[in-house]
Length: 230
Image (cartoon, rainbow, N blue to C red):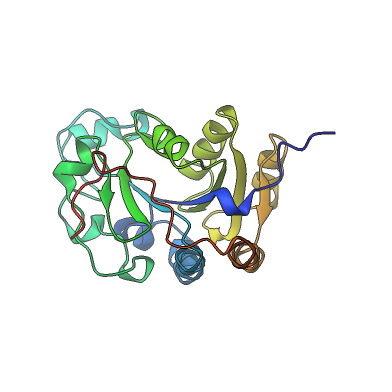
């Protein structure tokens, strides 16, 4: 039978979701997985595979917000507020210290953060909802979406469902995602999501890079899509 589920590591992208300082400090288990995510990202960079850091932001008083948070944000609360330290991606996850360009990101464009690293803003749970992620991945011939970050019941799960509905092969990195449980992992496996540890993924990515021996790197951004590389 034809396999549609097992990851194709030479054509994989790493999508790191909502790992920002406010969430690292407030969502249980997220701080614990930051070092693991950093190791995962390093393996993708070494293999020349693309990484997309998907981020959120809430400006006090705005209404384009998840319904569960909308009343609070409209009333003046804010989290991961654009331009604040709490909205930053932890430095250890990035190839260099980079400031996010929130005007660029919130306009729907992609910010280049390094040779293979990019940032993308999402307004709701899924990294595919009202974003350019699908078009970017198709343009880079990506067919496997590897997900890590914060926190499984919300944005990583929504992203994995949406990736599956777009016929991507999907992988959840279980020890690089906060709020994982055996039951939640089993639910995702029912829709074809493969689960793997950081050791398993870094080993597979390293082997695929050695076999491919392709020079250069895969960039998900075309010149007209990319923002400033600061």
